[in-house]
Each structure stands twice: as structure tokens, then as C-alpha cells.
Length: 185
Image 1 (cartoon, rainbow, N blue to C red):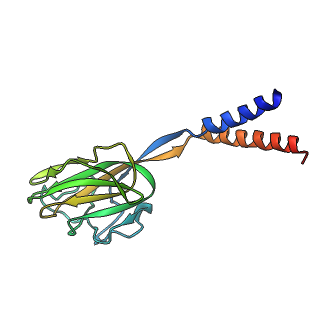
Image 2 (image 1 turned 120 degrees about the vertical axis):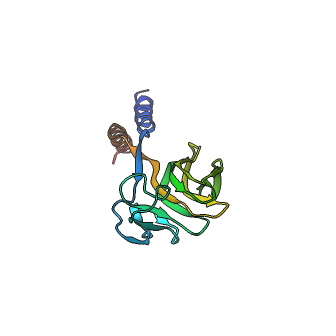
Image 3 (image 1 turned 180 degrees about the horizontal axis):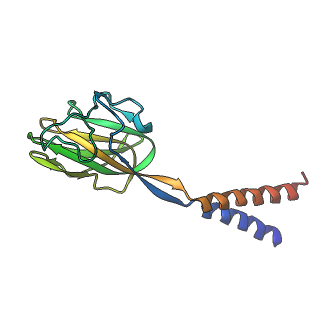
């Protein structure tokens, strides 16, 4: 009976330790200066090579939402791949030319969601993904002229709680001790 309780306690501790907190990331691109292609591994992500950043002044529809730098693409949208699964919220978009944009979220190459198409003609605002599903890639898709800026790209990652890591470690130690004691090693 004691052995069964010990095993159940260790396994319960291991299962309870799986909790995580969401950490929100907002990329405002302000550490990029000048104008060039967004580096392929910028912020630990993979970027479509057609994304370009720039920090010079422009009219109201093209000005950044925060800081000095924003990104754009002339590829009828562009993709961004994350190094883990994330919950993608969206980004600020600005345009003064006829355009219709939406997000597509993918997990392991499989489409998970498509946000509502948003006309972006003389528009500045947050283009939301509209989904809480986890993805490892997003694509900004433009079905019209494709000329807009993107700023303040926002997503959430899963971060292990310190208490959960402590529980995981103690559960593993308890399980190892139980196995060692019962195998005579």
C-alpha cells in the first residue's frame, strides 16, 4: 500500500508541474535602424525575406505606431515563423491605398485559422488574428494592392512557472528514489 501511495504521489506531482504562464511579446522593430531587409533570424524568429524595415518619416498613414521603425512587404503579404508554438494576437497596420488584409495561422504547416478580411484603405489600427489557437507560423495575406506598414507585432509564449519547475524536479527525484529503493540499486 505504501508503495502505491508513493508512486501516485510522485506521478501526481509530475502531472501538476506541467503548468505555464503566458508571456506577451510585442515587437516594435525600434532596434532596427535605417532601411533594409528584416534579418532572417530577427528576434529569434524566421522572416519571409521580402519583409523590409525603415525608420524615416512619412505621412500619417505610413508613420509607425510606436517609436521610429516599422516593416512592410511588397509580396502580397509575408510569413513569420516562430521557434515555438505561440498564441498570435495580431499587429498594428496602416495604409492609405486600397488593400484588404487578413492573418492566417498555421501549426506544422496546417491552416488553423483565417482572420476576418479588413479593408485597409485610409486605415490605421490593430489587425487581430481573432483566434486563441496555438500556431508556429503566421502569414499576413493581402488580396488587393499590398502596400501597408506593420508595427507592434504581438504574441504570447508559454513560460514555465518557477513553482511548476520545483514540483517537476521534486517529483522526478521522488520517482528516482522509489525506483532505486525497490530495485536494490
